[in-house]
Every structure is written in structure tokens, then in C-alpha cells.
Length: 98
Image (cartoon, rainbow, N blue to C red; front, side, top):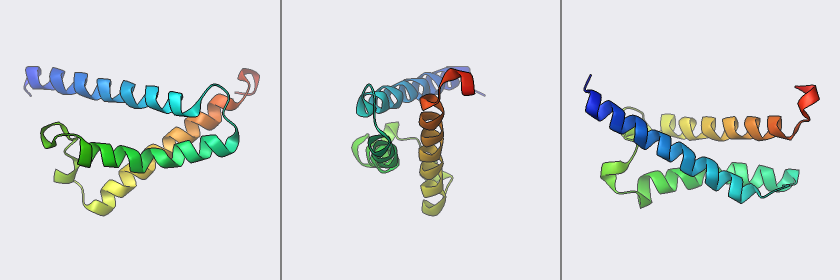
């Protein structure tokens, strides 16, 4: 394991995580209704895939296409959307019911 590349990869992934979290929160707004939350969450996967593989220079792409088939990559992005939907749903519940 190369420590320099591992730290760089970790920092890059952390920056990407923060980027998507901030973008998601901005897209949701302060008090999104269920329809808006669902639409924003459903749009996240395709937008992330577009940015990751069409907008981002190849050198900075996640590289999942080297390991996963197109179908598997679709499942990865679908899992991301499902996780975001679960998190948004959980966040809208009052703290007492958690």
C-alpha cells in the first residue's frame, strides 16, 4: 500500500462526499415537501453518474468502470440513491421517534 496515494485518494473521496452532501442539501432547501425530496433524491444518481463520467476529466473519475460492469455501476448509483432516500426519510422524523 502506498501511503501517499492512499492519503490523496482518501482526501479526494472525502472532498467528493462533502461536495455531493452540500449540493444535495442545497437542492432540497430548508423544508422540502415529500414530492420535492423524492424528485431531488431520484435525480441524484443520474446527475452523479453524468458528472463522474462525462464532466469530470478522466484522470479524476472514480474508476469504477475498471472493476464493475455497466449494470453493476448502475446498481452502485441506485444504492447511493437508496441510501440518500433512507437518510432523508430518517432525517424528517422527530428525534423522539428514532
